Amino acid sequence: MLLPSDEISLQQRGISKQQIEEQLQSFVTGFPFLKIKGAASIGNGLIHLSEDEQQKYLAEWEDFQQTDASVLKFVPASGAASRMFKALFAFLDSEDEKPEGSFEKKFFDGIEKFAFYDDLNDACLKNEDKTIPELIETGKFKDIISDLLNDNGLNYGSLPKGLLKFHSYTSEKRTPLQEHLVEGALYASTSGKVNIHFTVSGEHRELFEKHLNESLPAYEKKYSVKYNVSFSEQKPSTDTIAVDTNNKPFRENGKLVFRPGGHGALISNLNDLDFDVIFIKNIDNVVPDNLKDITVKNKKLIAGILVNLQKQAFAYLKELENEQISDAKLAVITQFCETKLNNHHPNIKSLKGNDLRQYLVSKLNRPIRVCGMVKNEGEPGGGPFLTVNQDGTVSPQILESSQIDQSNPEDKAKMMNSSHFNPVDLVCGVKNYKGEKFDLLKHVDKNTGFISLKSKSGRELKALELPGLWNGAMSDWNTVFVEVPIETFNPVKTVNDLLRKEHQ
Image (cartoon, rainbow, N blue to C red):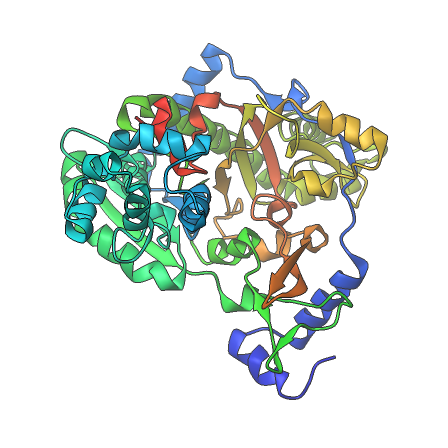
């Protein structure tokens, strides 16, 4: 199905023929549903911390921050803001001259509360020679929306979320990028240094760098820290081939069409970074300073749990190097593996001596992540589950609802009983007990990708997404779920979310 001329296209992206053949095969076979034992719940794969435990883990993290260990805040930030304004784009394209839908009405009712109001007012004065109140008074609602979204105004319809003004303060208006700089100083600093890495799209990288350079001096002064901020882009080598409805390579003007591999492609970016502990949080999940305390506290908590578990695992791995290790010590380590890391072996009692030692090494010597989970207040779906692995063991995994066979009544019932969901609140340990960095690409479950229907130039195509960053890309990690308050989850999916009290 590949032509000789395709080789140039593959070489330019750094994609091998074998990768393409594997991708084409995935379109034919699809991806299997995952076998789930059940949804994680308090006491069953999900930790709820007592007040004493909270104090212990907060102290653990604050002690760790005094060491010479390296800490990074990793922020996926390539998401475009266009979806935030979907309803406003529709209004702009409609025949209506004034807001008719509830979304547009809410937008205009609260327009003065947006952090970008003053900038938008300036754009209206420049383009229409009228203020926002004057344009509303004369029914020129669409002029206001045009000045917000289009490139002759603020161009918010084409910018990434990270560069939009989200929050208002007495002396400044902050973007999500700036809020992440503040967060980094509050919980991810070591020795007065804050390391932050943003993954961005190539087309916006220059804008990010400019905004960062304009922002850094003030925040370094305010928080008495030195920032080390880096950027990366999704690699062309993680693009995936598109196919037509017959699973043949989709071509346009004779050339293969590739698509970005989804956020799972970022495991490659993460793998390039050399740090002891890495926080992961999405760009749009930020709050103003008056609500940051609870976020900062819970970030420190899950980080404290991580370093505590890692410390124990590292000590046990050193003891497991001894082939003459006692049965009593093996029992202690087995208890840690089964209860603290929730790695359940259905026939663990059948493993003895060296077989048990080797099994424990294989389970403990892996990357580890502690994941905050919030209570589900809406429709149950993807989130924290206990999943059956290919070797028959059971371990915690973050699943999307599409990975669960909902035509199977038992699995559907397990999903509907899920009490928590994934807010993307992770802290990761990516080095082994000898201080060597794991090759994270070796811990990806390639059988957990996604296939979706898209269209291009009016033709239907099938797109392949790589295993999600916090789903299949981290499938072979040790995973611990911890309940965190719903107040730590405040994403901005639409522009009107900025009118919620959490963003005011």
